[in-house]
Length: 61
Image 1 (spheres, rainbow, N blue to C red):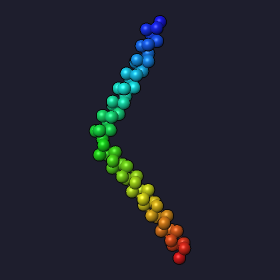
Image 2 (image 1 turned 60 degrees about the vertical axis):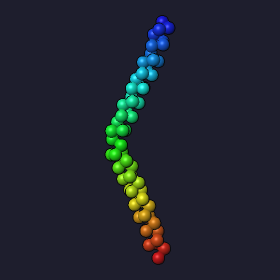
Image 3 (image 1 turned 180 degrees about the vertical axis):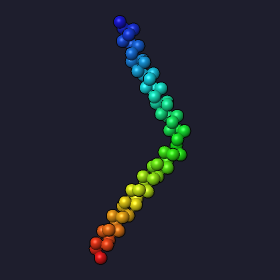
Image 4 (image 1 turned 30 degrees about the horizontal axis):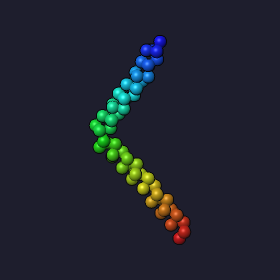
């Protein structure tokens, strides 16, 4: 009975390590696309801030 109890957490740990390893490999393989994605979000947020600032300045004039 104790062997079954100790085998289950060991399998869970092994699966977790395997999943993390796959995620790391995917992140390394697609690092250029991931960096482009984050830069696109950064540019989008920057553009939104500039638009809001322009609207506020136009309302003040």
